[in-house]
Length: 340
Image 1 (cartoon, rainbow, N blue to C red):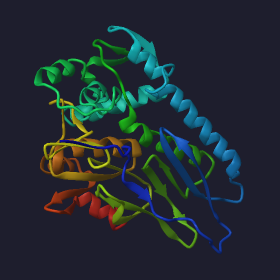
Image 2: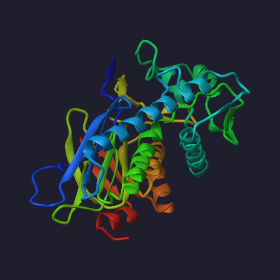
Image 3: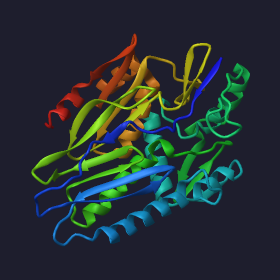
C-alpha cells in the first residue's frame, strides 16, 4: 500500500521567539513576507540612524522579486528556466546569482564526490516528487538508468558570464537558493550599518550580534517527527548560518519502506538510512544549506566521517527504535558553547 506525506519540504531550524516588549532604546524591528513558496522573517536591532522598517521592507521585497525572476523553475520566463529549455550544446548569459550558485554547487559537488548535484530534477519527477500527476512510483531499474543520463553537474560549465551545457540537463538551485539569499540580505543589512539581526528565509537563517539586554539570538532545532513539531535542541547563534535537512517532511511509504525526497545523485535513488535530519552551522548560510544536503545523502556513518574530516559543525539526529539519538561533531560542540 502506498502512503504519501504531502507536507512541504522545509528546513527544520526555526527561529525561537525573539520578539516582545523591551525596556530599551534599541527596539527589535521586524519585517516579513512570502517568498519561494514559503515565507521570510527579518529581525534587527534598530539604531538611531537605521533605515525605517517600511523602506527596508520594500528593498528586501525588491531583492527577492529580482531573485525569483532569475532562478525560479516555476516561471517559464526566468533566466534559469530559459537556460533549462535551451538546446544541448548551447550557452546563455546568466545573472550573477545563477553564476554564484553554480560555482558553489560545483565546489560542493567536487568536495563531496558527487553527493551534491543541482541537476537531479528529472529523478524527482521519475519518482513522482515533482510535477506530473503527483503519484509516487517505484520505477524500473532501466528507467532510473535512462534518467541518470540527464543528471550530472559535469555537463555544466561557466564561460565568462555564460552558463553552458553539453547534455539535456536541468538546473534547479532550490537546495541552496534560500541560504544564498540569506547571505545576500545579511550583506545588505551590513551596508546599512546593522550588525545585530536574525534573517530567516524558508527555514534557512543566520543571526549575529545581541538583542536588547545583551541576549543572543536563539534558534530551535526540531525533533524530526512526522506528526507535529517538537523542539529537540536550542542553539545560540552569533555570525553563523544554520541549515537543517531532513527526510520527514516529504516522502512516501510503500510496503513498509520510506522513500525520501532527498536523492543520491550517483545511484539515482532516494536515500534510505537511519539519519532523520542533520543541522549544519557555517559562516556562509548558502554553504550550510549545501552541506546539510550532502550529509543527509551520505547518511549516519559516511556523513559523520565526512563531517569530522572536513571540520563541519553538524548535529546528526538518527532514528533508533521508536525514538531518536543525536550526535554532534567536535566543531558543533565548540560553536554551541559559543567559542571559536
